[in-house]
Image (tube, rainbow, N blue to C red):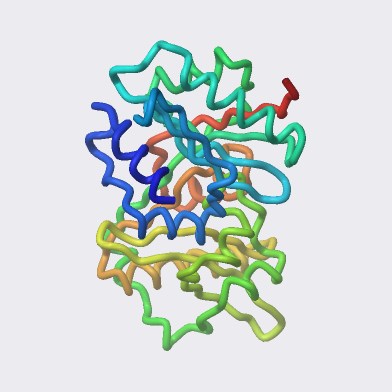
Length: 274
């Protein structure tokens, strides 16, 4: 872990200036929250000096290339391609054979790397955000509504949550996170009609999963849940990251007044033996 963290820091480039440095505690959080594996990560070195690093997360169905970095003084020498190729050759033997990466759309060199290595573009993942309007902030308090806390396991078991395409919002991430997300459910006399899993932060409330039963009641219940989250967050923005356009959540968020923002591109490939 220490070697990977050190290489990650040493290989920072100007494009990483706005991102916080990864320390050992942060690496361990990625292990817990995203299933990062040292055995799925790679180092490129010249002598004793790290010149490139790949951080990989692994689940039963796929391996995520979380980060690929090459030191600015050693770029355009094939290190990044070699890291990806080496990981693919390893996974062709050990599995899982599917590899994915979520690349910020604005990072042209990263996009070019995966395209040059033969990875296919699968989909776009869009960040959504809703800034509360005054009329929404004036909603009723939760004590006046059939709203109650709900755990991640119960929300997933309800069948209301579609499986997310984004790695950090997949059901596996929700279930195994070191800091389980908070949740709210809206209950009718018959069943759970809507639910939302979320985390509160300094820049607003991050939605990790939302779902509603079919029909008008489910849609209305979800609207009330979101209004309650806005009320609890004192009018802070609601946001949901990396939603695939084809996910039911995308249409739902647009209908509920969210606006699209930053995009990531998901590339994928299959592991190949040497």
